Length: 213
Ligand code: ADP
Ligand code: TYD
Image 1 (cartoon, rainbow, N blue to C red):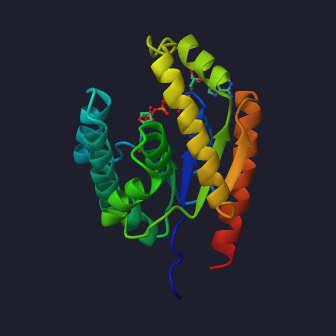
Image 2 (cartoon, rainbow, N blue to C red; image 1 turned 180 degrees about the horizontal axis):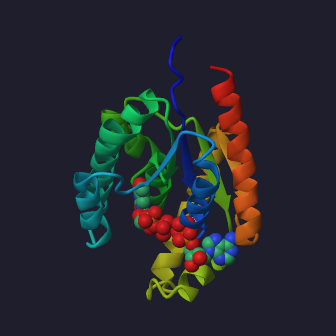
Image 3 (tube, rainbow, N blue to C red; image 1 turned 60 degrees about the horizontal axis):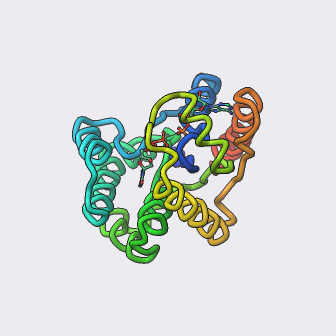
């Protein structure tokens, strides 16, 4: 019998929307029931990917350098970790993927959707997540969460706010284009509520997928 492939499930949303927290929670709840791994971008599961991440997050880069490094990092992540695991029947929960570059670099940094897509497809060649779970939240709530966490100190400057309103607008346009594969969750609810909501969504997707193969 042909072996079932795994699914790539991406999690998207602005910083502070709760992606990492909820991915950890649902992974802990579901990994004994399904063949699952979790990972994140920029970065992933190898020293090369994490080294590229460090360059990206620790330097103020020209926006074109940034988009190219993100695409290189993603290509390495897909070729060395995501695809081999999917081929082996393992489903991947990925904290951010291509749509982060489309919204942050394409719209936020104004490089352009088509340009960012083309740069990424040099490596991805049309490879896309099977599903994307979008963490819907307003800017003020996410900023409050991040500043409560004392992770950043430049969060209230005007340039930062302008960029984030463009990123949010970008996500809305991307969701409109990809209605079939996007699932929107209300990320403003409590950690417990969002965890339960995402757990139910994943259980349904994964059960149907593995039963139908
Ligand atoms: P992201 O990965 O999207 O940037 P995080 O998971 O790192 O977001 O969460 C940012 C901060 O908000 C953390 O301090 C986390 O504990 C908190 N947080 C996450 N989800 C919620 C929630 N649903 N309600 C309140 N606080 C949350
Ligand atoms: P991440 O570690 O996911 O931050 P957070 O947990 O706050 O969501 O990502 C680091 C930053 O990199 C974040 O501000 C989003 C940005 N980013 C891009 O601009 N483009 C991309 O393609 C990716 C993957 C991340």
